[in-house]
Amino acid sequence: MKRFELDYYLNGLKAHDNVILARAITLVESKRKEDQEVANDLLDRIVETKQRSVRIGITGTPGVGKSSFIEGFGSYLIENGKRVAVLAIDPSSQKTGGSILGDKTRMELLSRNPKAYIRPSASGNTLGGVNNRTREAVLLCEAAGYDVIIIETVGVGQSETLVNNMVDFFLLMIQPGSGDDLQGIKKGIMEMAHGIVINKVDGDQAKLAKQSKKDLLSALHLFAASETGWSTQVELCSALEKIGFDSVWQMIESFEEVMTANGLFDQNRSNQNVSWFEERVQFGILTELADKAKLNTLQSELKSKVQQNKMSVTKATVEMLKVVKQQWV
Ligand code: GDP
Image 1 (cartoon, rainbow, N blue to C red):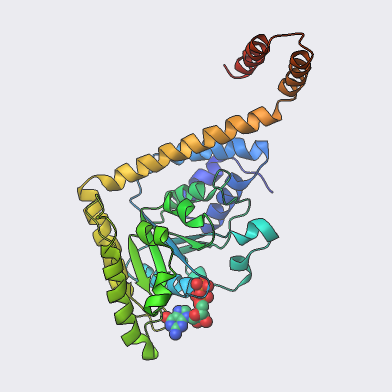
Image 2: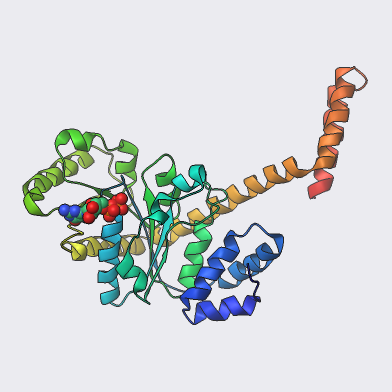
């Protein structure tokens, strides 16, 4: 990777340059020490960007229409004066090294729009979250003037929880279905969602969709009322026929209004920052420990002394922790 100075990235982001934004995201994903140093300075410089943005997470089973929706909804938002960035968390890339999201030609129209930025699949992601650079990518997109950030994930494993921890609004997309289909939706995800969008409400699906909405709303009533003052909404849409984007956006805007008025919008972001910090510190400590050859050697020596009764366990523990502390304090 070609290396650039910090100012190159800072100026590029300020100028809303998509090429430089892409390079900045690649930089923060890089595992090379020299890159990480510039990346850390960059992230530290943009931390106080006062860009008002909304971060939206979208999940739903493959085929439900997420990318069609984002393509249409993103264009709708741009027509309404927004700039839209789309990031994807793709659990498949971990196992296969490839990517189901990246291989498809997706969101072609949106990707050609200069007011949109699409990153199909961030490399180096681990699903567990600690090594994931999506949070940094969000900050970089915001520094580059994007005011709507969409994070898409395929509903597999832990990815919903991961995404929920980095967005303001979490949207679950489903298709019109019978009561039985709706029961298949994981309860935890229903509870997590701030909004549920029933997509593919076109052709002869309209009647079924209305019934699904009713069933969903009554299922949602069974959950304990949220303390936030927001209750999960259900909206209908057709990504194909571009119907319903306005009501989905209205839902997100009213969520923002409610959460801003009660102070929870900013509080949620602050809490997310703190958990992110704690997660990284824990990961860092474990990595450091695993890396320290000196500690490993000492540990083997002490183990063998303890084994042969040449040293007490108490003394060996004290010796070990003394060196651990020296490494860090
Ligand atoms: P994803 O895997 O969730 O991203 O789903 P895609 O956006 O790739 O859509 C899967 C299939 O559903 C494609 O064949 C789309 O054309 C189709 N599709 C998406 N949205 C709609 C819709 O609103 N109505 C109908 N009838 N088909 C749709």
